Image (cartoon, rainbow, N blue to C red; front, side, top):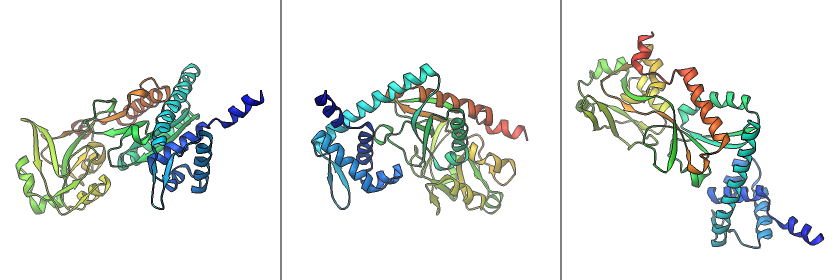
Length: 319
């Protein structure tokens, strides 16, 4: 009995495996500590205890960064499988109880996250208090599997075939400019004239920089645009557009109020870019109860509050 107790005491804790995986993904103790809200010393201690329990060196440590060892690579794969199995077990228990629980890591873009997703998750948390929600905002395309993200609330229809995607709401990007800009420069009469205008370029998560792909009467057309101002943040581009500094290609959810109030003008209305709103996750989470509940909640939330982000023509007709 004492022998068995000794063995059980030497088994690695699941929490230490999670800490190790986070350090490996973030390539540093400080970054992992910041995400968990603990000290780097605490992270170092947990890694040391895990290495002692497994009798291996998991990480190479330098003053600048941390890299994973060959043994660490193998342990990382095992840890991922073990924690996935635990997640699946918790999901099955949640399904039985009809009460999802556990940690859900969600990523979305800055503007949409602040204006829409944060409010939706606030209601989700109130309805399912056993869910622990961690929301990250980023305008770069995230590798869900390698970065440990469970759910990506993504705008844009270009989604890798190895991912599962559920449509949450309709949306499209449209061309717009302030009346002041159009008074100075005139409105483009066709898509080709955009190249002669000042355009406000944004690096979208799923779109080449400075290349606008638009669908119109003749199908898809590409136009290369330039301008003195560019950003990776949609709200900044929206403000520049309101200031009369150029033409922008922005989502309806972002600019429909500005267009409805007359502060922006919808130009070349026959052209648009499909940019629907999706919930995206990896295939191993296809049966996850917490993913299923969250996706259904978000889908119903967007339909209830925003009417699936109706086409702009419908919005303007209701003014």
